[in-house]
Image 1 (cartoon, rainbow, N blue to C red):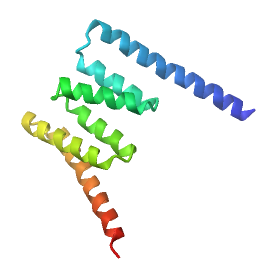
Image 2 (cartoon, rainbow, N blue to C red):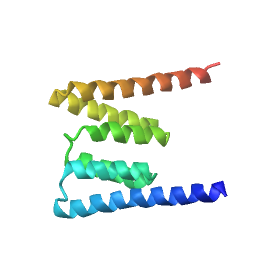
Image 3 (tube, one colour):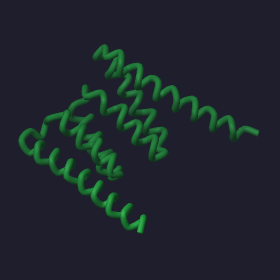
Image 4 (spheres, one colour):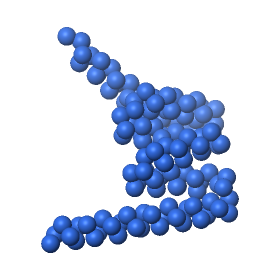
Amino acid sequence: MGSAIGKKLAIRKNKIMKSRIEQLQAFLKDDINDSFLRYGLALEYVRVKENDTAKDCFLKLIKDDENYIASYYQLGKLYESLNEVEKAMRIYKNGIEIAQKMENRKTLIELQEAYNMLIEIDEDESDSYRI
């Protein structure tokens, strides 16, 4: 009985998430170049675990609006969750460069911390292979 309720809740939650995606897509029909809406859409795809679509959204957003720097952090985190460490490190480095150019200290620090954490993890893993 409990699992049936759990399934119903999961289905309802999925419908709510899908409706958010549909709403954002409808808003984007009015202005396809709205970076804020495109960023929100990518985040919604992450939430419903449509990771390939989310990656595509973030990459296209970065290509079209390289100064939308929040995208670098979120795409890096997505790559991390998919165990694509090299891609995460590369996207963080790109974001760090843009944040420096824009003099956005807050985002710069966030990106540097995320990048440094990956470097430490990467070094720890390579150390563990040395015997």
